[in-house]
Image (tube, rainbow, N blue to C red):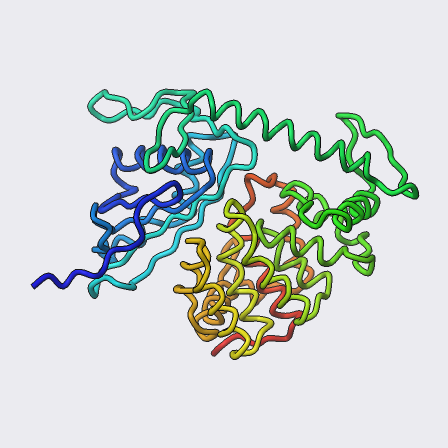
Length: 387
């Protein structure tokens, strides 16, 4: 009797199945790097390990979970793409697989400034090559393939559009705004001016959000920011919901209330597909801190009806507020440099996060920063951790 589970959704542009993949094996390590880079140069996506070719979940031994330590996988990727950096999320699940087995999901975000280039050869022990130095791979349908002319043209057009948007911000600034040209070697030393200008544009065009570099710059200068200014809290939170590094800090520092958070979470479910990865994983965690069990269930119902894979996965992973709060507690019970987060004072949490923000840019932000933010937000909301 075939007791295998029903198949998962079919592989596609943003979903890849691997029946087995061992990040400690030389050949598999190169395969993982190639697949991750290809996803990052496209629209991001997921790699699910433990799924047969026909889409049926089989799982891999649970004992292999330690091989998927995010910091080790991050170091592996950095060794091939440095000085660039890509932040991937890794999770395990026991759903739909036999006891003692797990599914491993690698969630790959879209790289903010493609192309992401492989910086060294990927050589197999037998002398053959998985890829050459300076190779550029892109996810085309269900395959990781060398970049095509159309890919380079798209990246060129995307860069041009970003430059035009920055120019448009200056052109569309209100008459009362004061514009100043900043030289290449000049540090932006007016965070409130920059933030107010961004808020003015956000008022006119709500889709115009801050990018990762902007959020880190503002976080480093948070002590001088005017959070009472119109639209500033909403701009910061909505921008950070798809770049989770600073999200929980902005929720705490800007003082947005539960009603506004509920609207932001609801609106997040309608964002474009390229924005879903980091946002979807953050929605249940934020909802667990702000919503009642009834409101949380309603939100998850909307997530479960979504047509986007990232949101569906988040709904399955955290079907009730109990699971979501347990995940929040797990992150808050973590440590940084062998010191428990609970043992750090509020100002020490902020100092640690500031140090991380100063060390890295938006493409290379520590995996520890969101956990610092969750602990800080939990304290500001006076939410005790489970015993």
